[in-house]
Image 1 (cartoon, rainbow, N blue to C red):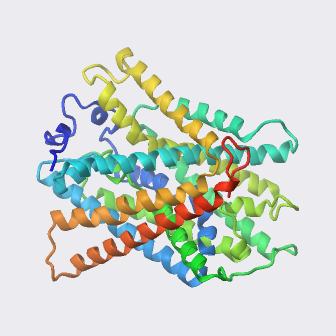
Image 2 (image 1 turned 90 degrees about the vertical axis):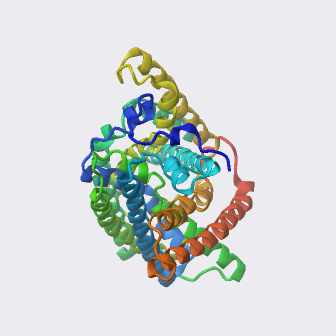
Image 3 (image 1 turned 60 degrees about the horizontal axis):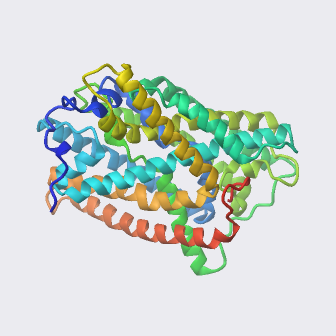
Length: 453
């Protein structure tokens, strides 16, 4: 086994003398409700508007079951992860990064790089997805105001990227707490607006015909079901829990569970209402973004325009917060390499590299978003390949390694069975998401001005 990189060796205190990533980006000053805001922003996002689309592949019964099971499993898994972090902290090794925690507990160098690779894939994926969706929101508003306007999707993506570059200069994760509180209210806001719009559409006289049947061919039904499971996994996914726990003022024990409880209260309200109302109205015609279903290209919109307009503005604003939360890990890696901790956070020596590196990162994400406007499919792959290992499998392994529950105990077997089930779901999900990508590939055009469904 290769030795884990040096940064794992000196883990007695997060503020190691030369670790600017820890000292600047992951400052430990937060209260439990701040962690709740961060968690909610990391989990509850506009991806919940994809839930009716996921139900398309599962139907009512299995859809509700999957949503509930994944909710329970992720809550359980995040609590375990928090316990593992507490356990290491009590043993004098406070970890503030997912990759160091995994390398420390599992003791292998490749694990460190595996987690970095997957986290980077998720974070860049979410960054690109947030910019693309925000660009799409602007485009929807614009095409309603000026139906024959000259601006294309990539113009809006460029606008969003500029805003993200400005916001990305906020130096620490902790400094996002007010933005993330707003984001929590925004997610509640657009969920209620969309649910209201769906109820309005479902009860109006031009309601779409409802059909809840699944696909006729058995093989495509199985593939759709696994793609749907990957989508739900990606919606519940987080992947940056240790970094969020790092923003808590020590001692962090127990605070994370309170933060998680607050976050899951929001999830309970938003996930079920969006999934049920959207699928109830549109059935197996649900679009991968329910707002698009409510505003069909042919025909009048199925709800008052101001409701949908407001929902889109809320989504747009929340996407900025989400893009920021997920780029923190990338920034923290950059600061670790580029900043000089001996000088102030805003000294010229640290400000310039931060400005250049973060701007470059955002431009890169924006460029990818403009180039690949078929992100719905890629998101399924990211969910299966990224979120499932980090959120459904690794926490269980880490817990079984650190707390060593007895082989005969229930906890041990629950953990093992969750790991096995989700490893299988991850492999199948990756396969079916990649299959969908390949099937849709002939519709894809680089720098297209339409987002492929």
